[in-house]
Amino acid sequence: MRYSKKLGQCFLRDKNIVKKAVDAAQLNEEDRVLEIGLGKGILTRELAERANKVYVIELDRRLEPFAREITSRYDNVEVIWGDALKVDFSTLDFNKVVANLPYQISSPITFKLLRHGFDLAVLMYQYEFAKRMVAKKGTGSYGRLSVAIQYYADVEFICKVPPQAFFPRPKVYSAIVKIVKKRPEDMLPLEDPTFFEDLLRALFQHKNKTVKRALLDSAHEIGLEEKELKEVLEGLDFNLKERVFKLGVEDIVNLSNLLYRRIKNRV
Ligand code: SAM
Image (cartoon, rainbow, N blue to C red; front, side, top):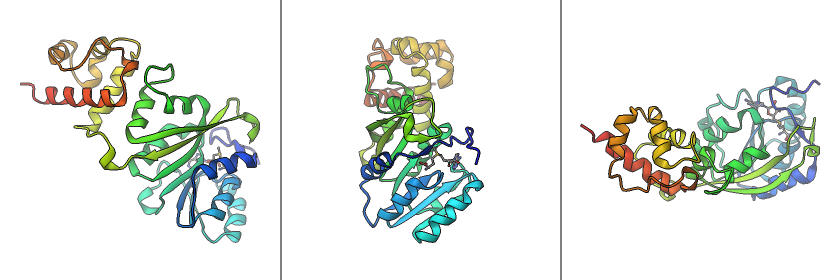
């Protein structure tokens, strides 16, 4: 079989890494797990051994022989043929997610999962992406992705994975990340999630600038002219002289709510 680069087909071959990922998911026999990307099923088998149910979404029909082999052995595995970005997750009854993700869809699939909800996910990403996900404020990797993810979830770096753990070998290192979705009552209240997303884009286009400069330089991202935004910022109860990359998630949520209220109440 020719491996498709476009589909991110780097299959895990190192059983220790498979075990590490599945261990991090702390599976019990009641868990219903979603896996994205069957591949040859190295991870699926381990999940089927430990969980109550495994849903696995796979786009490439050429992998059908591997799917048949697995479903003939494990009656708790259900294969869904299709694009994980298009499958309606509400038709699948899962509480955990474990996957060696096709790296091309890392970002959209992670946000789709976060929006849908789950208890815990253990996911493999490209190393640099994983570093950005877990980065703390004030560090070099901290950015829009860090804030957007950490708003929804607690994230933990599990381990770095070398290229030789896969076949074919990817060019870069990978990493396993554990994501624990926050309960709705533990999430910081947001006046308007879309405004928060726009604000993140505006701020982190200039992450080394002060908050004020960054906002004025990206006023269009939040739908205002620079002049209008200047007025909105006047007397705002927020330290606008702080550098963007030093703002924590809570600071940005606070700024988002303050700004949103001011903009909405303008005459
Ligand atoms: N889980 C297997 C393993 O660890 O060896 C395969 C992982 S491989 C990195 C990613 C898998 O996702 C491939 O089998 C690929 O065909 C599949 N895939 C790629 N894009 C997909 C998509 N949009 N929806 C569902 N599966 C996809």
